[in-house]
Image (cartoon, rainbow, N blue to C red; front, side, top):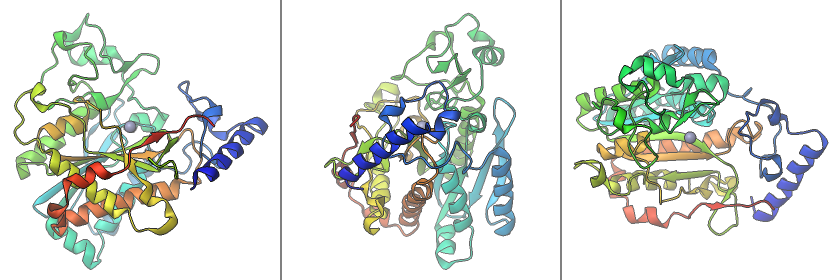
Length: 391
Ligand SMILES: [Zn+2]
């Protein structure tokens, strides 16, 4: 969409607010972005009605396993703090392993829908799917934060008292910095540590965003055990991809178009700050991001090609991406435009599809080996993400 048309869309959105109120406000938690700064939302639906809830996710995964004749194997990897099952789907027998998760932030839903479609596709009978399965093993957690998904919050559903009950050595300690006492939950994506055997120490709390996390949440613990098992099986978890959503008001560097997706390879400033991690490979992460970027080019006026780079001054060792990059995984962050509680359903088809195209392209380039010949320097040429202020 050209910027001029974006401004027109903004006016239309504001008009909606003035006349009837955005439908999304009915389900918006207290962290709502002021409606006057909405941009490009074109809200036409309400809440999360277009996304699977936990019961529907369960049914969808059972159906995928059944209709693929078990080619896609679905199991329970663990339980959330509220006792919901966290699912793990596996397809393929190849030597290269791609581990992908969605919705570590419960209100970021598009990646889960994309994974359901991709699992069905990868488990299918097409020659392309069979070729991928020969070369690649894909392991997916669709919707890690199943509790946050049910109540539409970024955080999981867990109090600090729950943590102290699990780790009595933390009694009397100031709660972790990523605990939100109003919501009663943690930003699970700050709970990771490159040391999979780390045990929470009182002196390491409350911590901060520039330091590692603790595996105090059952959700992060579940991912850790999946990752550990894959390392034991494959040696290195070759690729780790994390599917998120971001605020929708970003444009491409030339301000010509809205950017429906930002990606990134970079989560660690200085690997040596966190110990000795000899398998950390920034170039491998850059190549994986280039594979995603290139897969989304050449789709005409669809907007798929307008993806941008997430800020590169990021230093977040407590994220899954940061911790697993230190352990040697090539990592890719997907930040799809729009938080579900702010936007309507109109754009969801396109937003889901671009994740499918980008992720499928990455897997294909791993399967056919072409990823090895991609130039890491091409990563640095991807346009920057530009924040759009209110019009
Ligand atoms: Zn997120």
